[in-house]
Length: 98
Image (tube, rainbow, N blue to C red; front, side):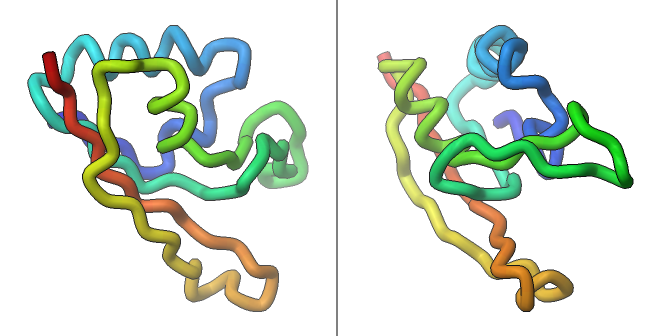
């Protein structure tokens, strides 16, 4: 299993496919992620800087780019300290097959 928590959000969108290819290659069967969620790609200012954090639907990104993955579980979880801003995490579990 490969597990990421707050890792993919710091990978620039232009580099994300190469990064996730390596995750899929290294995973024997499962990919488990917990990352900031947004329906569409959105850059977020990180500690006053741009170009360091993006949120998106990372589970959908995997499924759109890797046909040998299937979604076993996905949940949207409110971030307790940021509930007033409506920020949520996405927890997802993917399985490799074939």
